[in-house]
Image (spheres, rainbow, N blue to C red):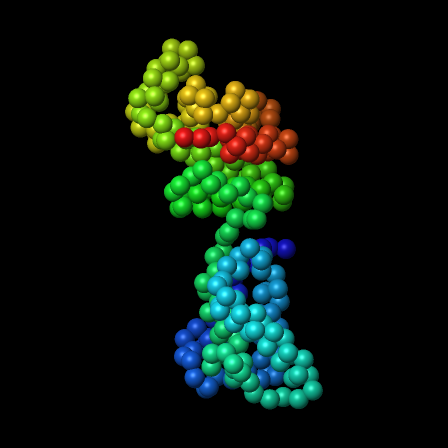
Length: 264
């Protein structure tokens, strides 16, 4: 079963009840009746499938959302005995319960980190923190669904972003000195001048040189780097390997290690 998100419910409402998008408070022209039962049942079914973490509403909006759903369920029961028209929920805005649901879900995101996702409180940049938490949540979801390549690629992407962030917190002189120590040994040639142009291998080696991550985390991150490269068919064929549950678990474990290590 595919994942239902708020925008899908909003899209369905717009198809079934086009007037709900622009209904003004006090507008009683658009009423509901038993003829709308199938459409309402379809909306309620999709609402029921929404992940709870995506319902990010304030108190008033949440009250209207819940009341709208309860009102529609009650109408479906009552219409089995007799038909009548219905406009609004007494005590709330003079809007159709369909409109109340639409307005609430239009304010909800289609993506939100699961409750178990690391908070990443050490990252002060709220936008970066939220984006990384979304990617970590998506990684865990892909792992649960057996999407090995997706989970491996996302793990590597988040590891890169976290190590880049950690290196950016250090004085540039420290990063340059650590990099020089590795040239001629770990690195055949100096990395690009800009950290943004580095690759995961370079982030890992300089981060461990600066003790931003432990030696054990570096080992796990190197494995994640190698496993991520298996998404390229040519490399996988040459090595006789492919992304599977084992390689993915290693990549996700490396991500968890990196999350627990980086500090400014």
